[in-house]
Length: 127
Image (tube, rainbow, N blue to C red; front, side, top):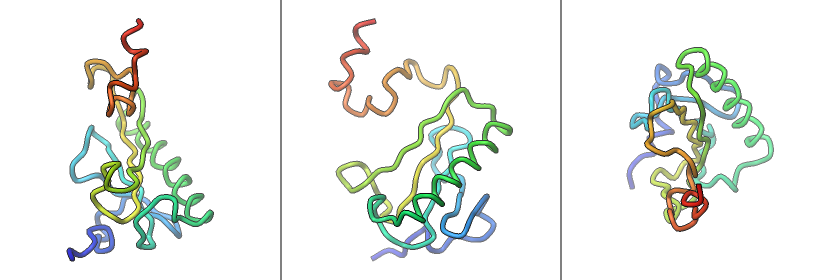
């Protein structure tokens, strides 16, 4: 089994943290400023987080969002977590994606993450 890439981070990779979570820039960013919020405790799934961990994760999301606003000035965000292999999770250590978006970075951003299954967004065709 491969070692967990999030359990062996260098202190230089960490851009923000609190008692229960850390933030790093994604090594394979969707857009400039893409950040991962990672639980300090090693466990795979979002729904296994304690209430305290959930609060710490959301606190850090809020903190990095303010920093991203100042540094990159994005026009929008996607915030999401993949839970399980069927949902696209590839690293089984809880992490949440904070993805800044910029006008023009997608041909048609309408539908956001629902576009994973285009058949679920028929309203896109209605306008």
